[in-house]
Amino acid sequence: MPARYRYSHTNEYIYSTVCVKLLLPGCGCLMPRGEFDRSSRKAATRARLLEAAARVYARRGFNGATLDEVAAEAGFTKGAVYGHFGSKENLLLALMEEHLARQVVEQVTLFDRERNTWERPLAGSARWMERLEQDPDPFRLFIELWSYAQRDERLRERLAEGLQTLRATFARFAAASAADAGLEPPPHATEQFANVMLGLGIGLPLLKLIDPEGVPKALLGAVLSVLIRGVESSPEVRELLADPDRQTLPSSR
Image (tube, rainbow, N blue to C red; front, side, top):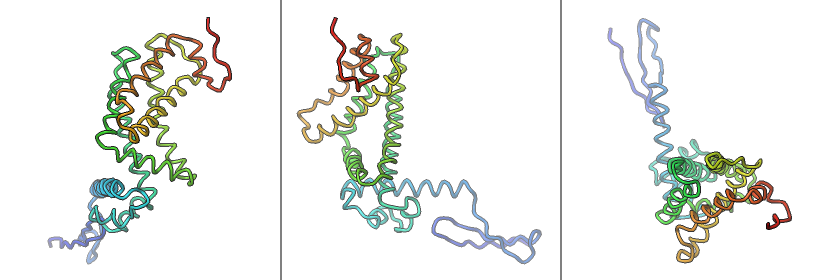
């Protein structure tokens, strides 16, 4: 006797009730359509929610946006947003984590060890500032999240974790360039250089959004190039970078 099929619809998955006489006579078994199907559907839903959230947050800002508006923009219910992210804060964090992950991939791709060490930041810095000009909304949301995180320790820790991935990438760039230049940097020098890169990468875009004409797009790369040349040419500068809390500058010779 052929099996009889009936489909039941849930919020996320489609289940097939199959009566299999050889296994369980007279009984139907509720079975999911497979782990791959479930995972792909969940990923697609998450992606649509993030895209919708980016548009809503860009229009309304973090404080003005609501999960109801995000859900409507994505074509889902508010429950779907809660099911994937839990809160408006977690949704913004997820947006920032996706943005930072893309930045890491892009910077790694643009880091060219075939170029002179002082030239290596130029392509990545140029792309960093180009993205700011083309679409400033992700950076604006980052600033909103930063401000909000000053009053929420859990958010601050999550944001710090996301930035640590970018900082670690910059530290690897510094270590690779030091090795290519034949230098043995002092302990913590590459980590502090990464802090400088990250600080400039946040600070200069912040200034440029306020004063677009006053901050040249190429300034970020130029400053990093100057810094690399100074660090490579002076052991004292490398020591100072590694231990910036020292109160005295190296004496001139």
